[in-house]
Image (tube, rainbow, N blue to C red; front, top):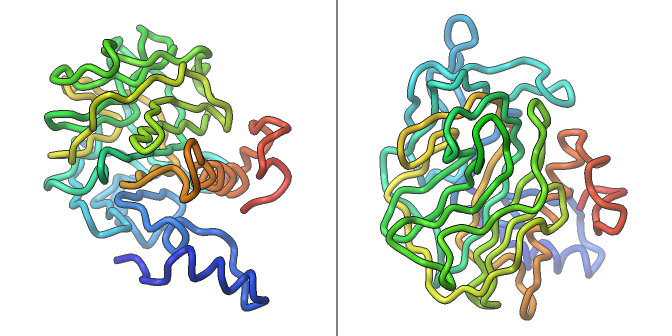
Length: 273
């Protein structure tokens, strides 16, 4: 389980000249779900680098694997990533927290190598009112936040990204459901890349998480370095505050050598949070 020291307490220590530590999801965010290929203590590897088990670092979800995903050495910034061959996935075996009062955001660093169906996903959630981060094309990642068929957000079934992710390219993708600010949108490498849609319904808790697998059981070929989701607003401040999302983007970018992909005006372009 994650530590109990809150981000506000740590911020208070910094403000008063107390000991300072690098920003970290476990102490500054306390995510509801988190997998991390760089943390070799959070998974077990068997023969031929096949993954025997993977742990959600928050302790909220129990994960099983479809097929034999592998650990790929030196996949990004001299660190390992999880590799899926197009017929493999991680799936949770239990329900768990997805949103709080409709507020949810997720962020992942992944690379797609092949998508064979327009709904192939980097991650998806099964439930009455959930969503999937989908490719949106055949053998191309045009990208969409695909709302569950049982719900309709502001008269739309999906929110489409305005720029693609090229094949064989790692990207940091964030998805935000900010009920407090009445906004839904997606970001790529620290820039908002979808319309900001009004949020007239609330997503619900998930019955399972699917990594590199969509709700129709189609699977994606590629790599996942790290992914987490937070059952809370994207920032603790007023309307449209995304400071937590920006910190997570900066954390992933500098940890995984992706800082060059952040825009020049990103608050963590030049240094990690």
